[in-house]
Image 1 (cartoon, rainbow, N blue to C red):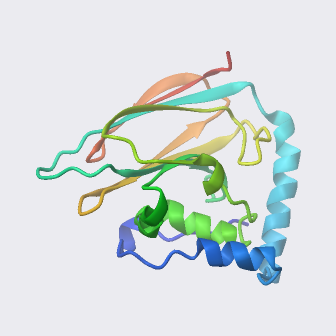
Image 2: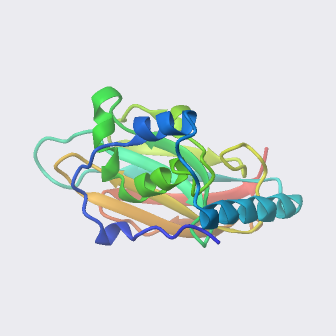
Length: 211
């Protein structure tokens, strides 16, 4: 069983109070208690992954994209998140979360899908893994980026050679919001291009054997 997250296209992008520090503090004090169904779901997921990692393959995924602002006026650096989930919506690996360091954390909810997933994770429903401290970076100027997924999850354990969904999410202060969802099969090598989505352009995926 996996946690089903709302579609960001139907969710308001209005900033909300960021609860990361409160949740982390509560977790540290043992104040956050998993509900029974959430705990059972997390346990089942762990067992399923442990069984299927035996079927993992030595492939990696090269991801390329360009953020090209199409509007006029002042251009702010975009907030960008790139991650993978199972087809059922269970988080697998967050590759990068780019946001303004410091006070800019208040605008992380603008990355609607990633933020909802992260809050569920910190609340214990999706494994309790805090990835932001290890994958976050400052915002980057608009332009091209390349990332590599090495076929491991957030704990750096090999994943099963099955189906996954790649997400690329971008939001800009006083600007547009886009999200790209693209299914991939880790066991099948090959290249493919993904249709542009607003400011997210030249999206490419190359599944190849690890070098």
